[in-house]
Image (cartoon, rainbow, N blue to C red; front, side, top):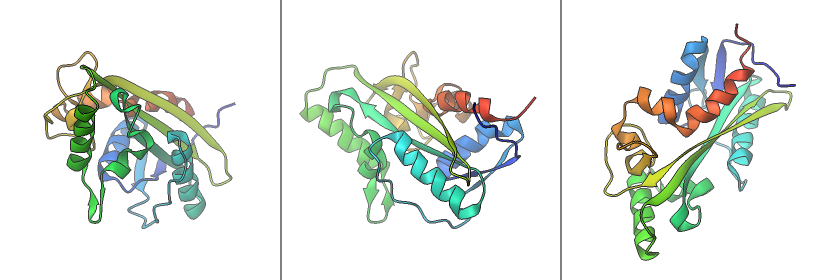
Length: 204
């Protein structure tokens, strides 16, 4: 049986401001406020797993153990079919630089690799998100979501974060970065996973 979350304040195991804002907006209608691992000064655990669920579990359990609070973690990324599913769980790694993450660099590399591979168009891809809600006693619940689409070039839009400027969801003419936060949050991979997570909330 699924364990219920009964509180009104949830620790979100992330140091990513954009991700925190998306999750906080999704939680707000349920009367749940968020505090992030970054705000509490928690260290970022090393993500050593090869799946989104594995890495989300690492983050959620590390935060729950450190604070004694239930913690929600999300691991997400983009899978590009023309690159054999890359960057996948390494999405953030492709953006890594000595001074922080540079997703323009990551998106440019993605498109250049597709060009080198002579990948056919449309260059289909999907965003995946896995949310893990963990408790200090070691219990967790796992929820997976995805959104299909394609990668486009040049980048378009200034909203969102990460790969949003080059991802155009199926059935839409705009990229995620051209959509309002509200529009994106209705159809995103994170919203899909969140739609399953809400069954955990002990709400009328």
